[in-house]
Amino acid sequence: MLSREENEILTRVGSGTPMGELMRRYWVPAALSRELPEPDCPPVRVKLLGENLVAFRDTSGRLGLLDEFCPHRRASLFLGRNEEDGLRCVYHGWKFDVAGNCIDMLNLPLDSKFRTKIRLKAYPTVEIGGIIWAHLGSPEKRPPLPLFEWTQLPETHRFVQKAWEECNWLQAMEGGIDAAHAPILHRAINPNTREPGGFRGMRTKAGFETTEEVEPTDHGVMSARLSKMSDNKVWVRINQYVTPFHTFFPAEIYDPQSEGTIEYKPFINGHIFVPMDDENTMTYNWIGRFAGEPFSNAEIAEHERSKGRGQSELMPNFRKKRNKDCDWLIDRQLQKTETYTGIAGNHNQDHAVQESMGPIVDRTQEHLCDTDLQIILARKFLLEAVRMVQEGREARGVQPSYYTVRATERVLEDGTRWRETLRYFYNPIKP
Image (cartoon, rainbow, N blue to C red):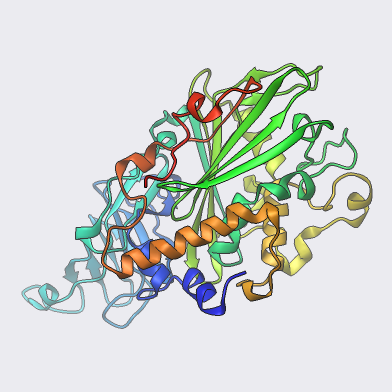
């Protein structure tokens, strides 16, 4: 468990807080590119690290991320007119460019120089991998561009989606690295169920002797699950937690339940748990394919259906229709006969249990066990990362090499030195 002070350090993300200052050392997802599809399209609200912002794409296609409120009388610029390379407040006509400069004031004479004294807070952005990333920290501490491997795939070979999770970022992220929950929370009671979110197939076959090895790395925490199979082989599955809020999972092995037939599919997926404020998280979900045919619309639709996170599941503000106000639409009959939770979709199941803990978990009341090692190490990693920033040192995991981390899974001969065989993916911490 954590002390009350440690829990406060890890969960509070506002400006000036220890975790908030750490988060501001990294590139942070602010919006999906498709939310601003064309020049002069409507602006969008962005809640990021406790700050109310507005994003827009100007006439020239440049991206702006500004304080939401006009510095004149604090009207929301979400209501603004996106026109002629600037966002204009509809209250008195003050207009701002993507850098936050005030370039026009309709309520003052044309020859007034007052606008030169006004500047709105603006954050730098880059558009990479279908995401608009922002850096909210000091310019001199800005890290290399977020060129994660999956972001460099062609648009045809990746897909990104997001959903609002109504709890603190840390309990969302910890749910993402908690491998022990998957075969329980996502279990299918009826192996033939067509309900989304039923965990079945290779991972649930009986007779596997499974061990897990969890270790700190330069970029976060690595978890390797080793399952011995009946034919003198071992199935190695490596998950990665990458500071501060990224998780990578492999999805490379396909088991059609035909007597252990295995096919390798160069396919990965992951999550980014972005703090909106202390009690809300925007969870970005991405999938990528490194080779083969592009994703088809049917594949993406089935992926979203199985996870329970398609557009039909979301409101326009990305809040889930299955939320705490309606008890996540739990179906008790379904829970008795089809799936372990009675909630459709792995994504919704994860969010339901994490949101059910309350906005911020009181970790002083926890009783952790052997399967929680990755969570324990991630907390230690983050606390150390916070201390390093407080001491004026470089933040953990801001070097370009941390963008190369990938999760993987492989079936190897029993006795194989998996660390050496999978060294491209395995990145132990340096002494």
